[in-house]
Length: 135
Image 1 (cartoon, rainbow, N blue to C red):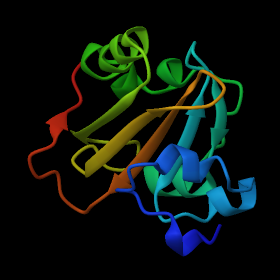
Image 2: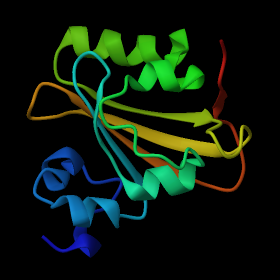
Image 3: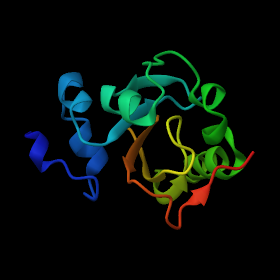
Image 4: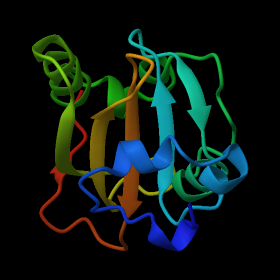
């Protein structure tokens, strides 16, 4: 599959992502994170490390432990409720990441073939109407 054919808005984004190599995932124009059901990071793209400002590849760490914003009830709770209800396919806006707490981000969260979840993160330069990170 060619990288140009992978679009953030694709209905089958998770299926497309699972056909790519790690090298290809690292070169997508949006962030890609794969978590197991407990929130442990199984994959964290180089693009996400750079664009988020986190700078590291936290494989083996719990995403919700290293990111207070993503651990927030509104964020983590929404994902956990969706996982409890069956296949996950969420899309929502949010404000804030490691590099810029006011940056608007758009997230897609989808079920992975390994029973975990994919988190796809697209960023813009402003916060817009995105929901703010809350403790």
